[in-house]
Image (cartoon, rainbow, N blue to C red; front, side, top):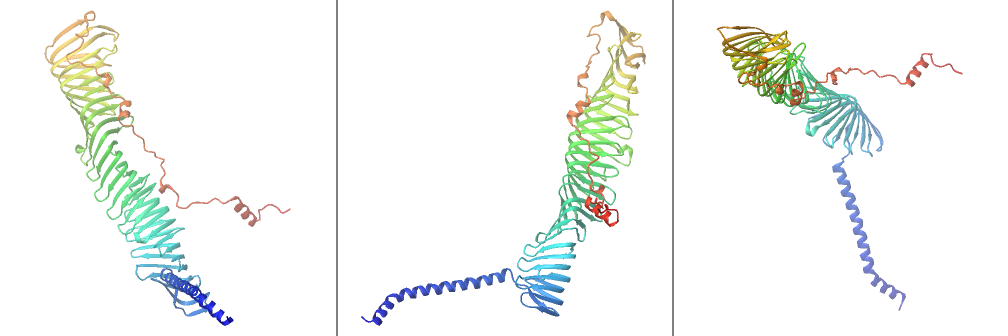
Length: 564
């Protein structure tokens, strides 16, 4: 066989394999080209390149170009203009100088600055010096702003100010999420509008509903001088003028309201508090506490319920009262000022204690009416009736009137029980001690006859239509009767427990409320007057120089250490 024949035979056998190999190579090459083309197209769709639309002068090659005068560029939906620019075509970046403006043709967003850096790949614009960011009615001004057009988020630092149709907000740092119309202000935040000024360190502001939410300490002063403070943040609807404060205090010239959660509607002048509520009436020097409460400022009407407590502040003492529910009404007219209390009434003052089912306190005459078989203790006496009213003057119990089944018990110097009872009883007190008692209707009295306040001689028991007695330290000094009395004397040796008690006698000293009783009902945590308030912080912070700075300044002044 010739060499040519051998060659033809080999080629004939090998050709299909070669053809198959070449075919696969061509396919892979085409696939690579297709992928490369698709990638370039995908990159062009996603990243896009910066385009030069206009410039008075164009200097440079393809790697770096300098654009001077009336520069106009375009990137996707953004139109860019400036006085001059450095365009890095390969990196798809530009540095912009003088009268920089980036305007979105679809969204109403315009940014202005003196200098900016724009990255066409990441869509991030870094704007510096006299930055103004505008979105419809909202304008943000700062010196340093990073604007991510991909996420539509603008971030500023080193002080910024946001102005809309209602409010002006300033802070050290901030994040503006345009898609959500949300701005987060951080560090030294101040919100100012025509009605008030607010300070905090963390505030989230929604520009469309114009609501402000704070985290942590928040302090506010209204144009009238009222203050609103919260330790754990707040929520404020600036259009509806509704506040919600957490661990908050609202203080006006006339009142102070505090609660763990406090709601305030400025238009309605209405407060609502939950958990540890307290309302102070400064004029009446009365403070009420409870689990929940409501207060109508214009009506000066408050409702507090849930383990309620009242503190009536006097110059030298405080009257405490517990109840399930409290209703307080203040008014321009003295006769319309009152406090109502219902259920579980307990009274305590240094020299006065009492029990009742319900109570009415009239501010005009400092009278306290007790209902449903009340009991009152005053130093050495105990008085009870179906109802009674007593008056406080000069911080002491002054007089009392008891109606129906009135019963009075006084202990003398030997701790004997002097007793009086009848249909109606009037008592007069001097410096807190009972001085006179007058009983009208079915009057009965039982009192011990003492010699020199030290020797018990016996018991006088008297029945009469009316009886009036004068006392000194609980002992009877004088007795007067309207008609001839029916009396009986029992010598000391014949005294028994039975004949030494009037019918209905009950000495209930173990029920007498004490300060411990009040504290067990509701232990009040006093307001810390030294709590931090951002309005007390100086606006200008003085920075102390470092030791190195001091030495350098001394050297410049010629007072540095001598050279060797």
